[in-house]
Structures are given as C-alpha cells and as structure tokens.
Amino acid sequence: MTARDLTAQEVGARAMTVVDINRLLGPLPYEEVASRDPAGLVGELDRLRIDTACVVHTHALYGDPRDGNAALKEADGARLQPVPVLIPGPLGTAESDAPLVRLCPAEHRWSLTGAHALTLAAALAKARTTVLLGWESTTAAEIHQLASALPMLRIVLTGTGYRSMRELAELMDHHVELSVDTSTLAGHLQVEWFAGRYGARRVLFGTGAPVTDDAGPRYQLDTLELPEADTALIAGGNALRLLGVVDP
Image (cartoon, rainbow, N blue to C red; front, side):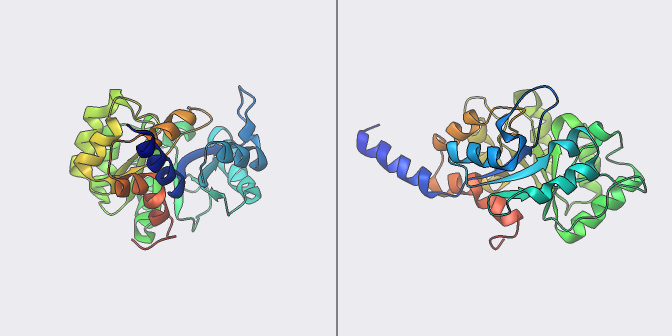
C-alpha cells in the first residue's frame, strides 16, 4: 500500500458515520470504567472516532431493568441512543416505543419462546422494532423457533464469534431478518465472510464495550477488505436505517 492509498483510506474512514449498535452505559459491578456516566462514555466515543452509541444501562442488565431504563434519561440523545431492556409478562417492564430494544432472557430468567415472550415479540415485529439479543443469553434452537414463528421480527445477534459460526450461519441462511454485530467477530476475514455471504446490510458495527474490547472492532472497521459502500453500511448505515434515521 502506498502512502497515497493510505491517505485515501483514512479520509474515507473519517468521512463515514460510525454507530456502535451494542454498548453499555453505567458502572460495572467488578471494574471501574470510564463509561460509568454519559460524559465518560462520550469521551470514549471521541477517542475512538465513534459518532453514536446505542446504549443499554448496566443497571438494566445486572439489576432491575425498570431502574436501568429510567437511568437512560440521562443519556444525550445526540450521541447516545437509549436502548431499553424489556421483560415480557405481568412481572415485566412497561412497553417501549424505542426503535431498538434489548432482550436478556438468561440474565433475567425467562424463556425466549414462552407465551409471554412470543406476545411481546409479536408486538415488536408489528412495530418494526429491532431486537438486540446476546448469543450467550439464549440458544440457537430458541432463536430458530422465535424467528420461525415471527419471520418479520428484526433481530441483531451480538457476542457471537468463531465458536458459533456453524450454528449462526445456519440461522442466517434460514431467517432473512437476522443480522449480526461485529463485537466478537475477530477471526481472520470473519466480517468479510458474513458480508460476502449475506450482504453488508446484515452486518452491524458493535463493540459490546466495556465488557468486551472496543478498540479492536474499531480498528477492524478501518481495515475491512470490502468495498467502501459496504464498509459504510456496516459502520453506521445499517444502524441508522434500523433506528429510522435514514430511509430503508
């Protein structure tokens, strides 16, 4: 690569909108983190040249989702897009009109394919709300059952990685509304493989930070061996579409 080529690549990287679809805001129970408050998180976004982050509050993940969802009101809407955690059923959370929500069945001890969950998921599918769903929070069989019952439900699977590649590929082959984030797709050309097989519109930049690394996925984004248009979709175009910021 020549110096001239590198300069062009850097300019292109700086020009694209970068949206982290999978980020936590708030304190962690086991570690001091900069993103414990909105100002600290925005500082981290600036450091890594990330324009916007879709944020779940740690209190919603590790404690009571109602408290965590309420704490998202402190988030700056210009840089931090609130993502409430929803729990189905009479002991669950209130409904939300957010364009992006997170479901955490394992963390909050409910079944992804239970009657209450299917009712909630049907409402989300009807509203064209996108669901973040952690690979570690459920099973491939439950994801298949849910996506089969509600083929229009938009799901972004997070925290996948090389150990899940075969199951993940099978799911994405069968369910066109399934997408994947890049937070743990750290293997050689894994992101390129998914973009090549399923299209760049089904791959979204995400870090999972601060639980998982943010600098690695951000560097990977700048060095993807993909056409510029595909990289721009992964970086932020797909997220902006799901959030309703740009047309489908």
